[in-house]
Length: 109
Image (cartoon, rainbow, N blue to C red; front, side, top):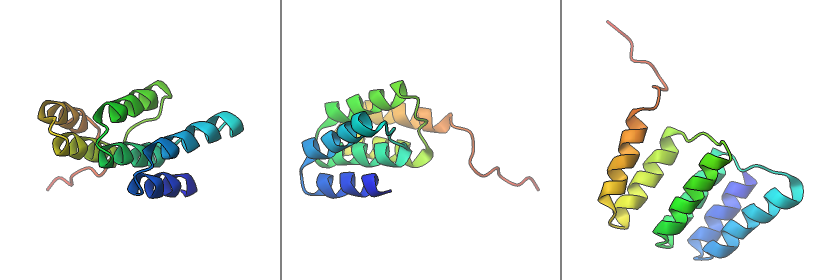
């Protein structure tokens, strides 16, 4: 969680490059693999800093690393697409989100 907090703080401070560099450096130097919480904070930081293409690049890296997205990640991704005026990409994200297995199955009466 410490890495997530660092990314979030640096993103809020408009220091996106430094936030992403810390993740890259720690991954390379210590063999760490970012988890979904770190990727979610990275994507959110990209959108906060109005870097749509960079957000997509982070998403592609996450997929290549084999990190599995969760519902919260997709909501952050969809909201960011809408905020930066990319509605067609937000629709695609929502399609991905609706194809995820349910976290809590609905009880049948």
